[in-house]
Length: 167
Image 1 (cartoon, one colour):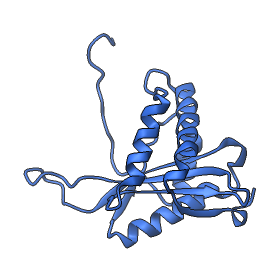
Image 2 (tube, rainbow, N blue to C red):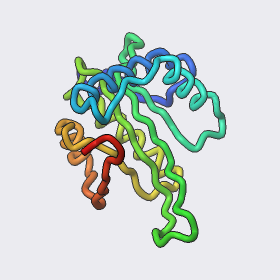
Image 3 (tube, rainbow, N blue to C red):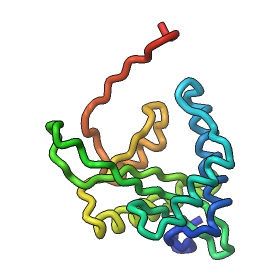
């Protein structure tokens, strides 16, 4: 599917069922990559999240969808603003946001994700956001390639240590 056939637009309340399906499909793919890190959230929780996000008229965040001429929603991108660092920390306060892009498997590779991300970038720029971040699991090589092609790069290293029962 070519992106010229798609409409990229802000999501609305009528899109909630499709957004839920996209989120669940994405979660299932991530669980297959690393079941110790990812889970499949409950559909009703995901539905409440998107319904609330789309109902807030003064929302600081945005959700865009990619829609076929037949009305099928085949992708989404969420732009979720980061809160600024507390004044006692050393990081400079720069408006930033996290992006989460999901494209259905049967339309991947045709430019849908790039079109969604471009819309997210235009919106974020218009909102005064200075940079976007994409948290990607290192095992998701396709997502790493996608975001790298879009100009995303390493911005540091996050070290973690699992506590408790893990050895």
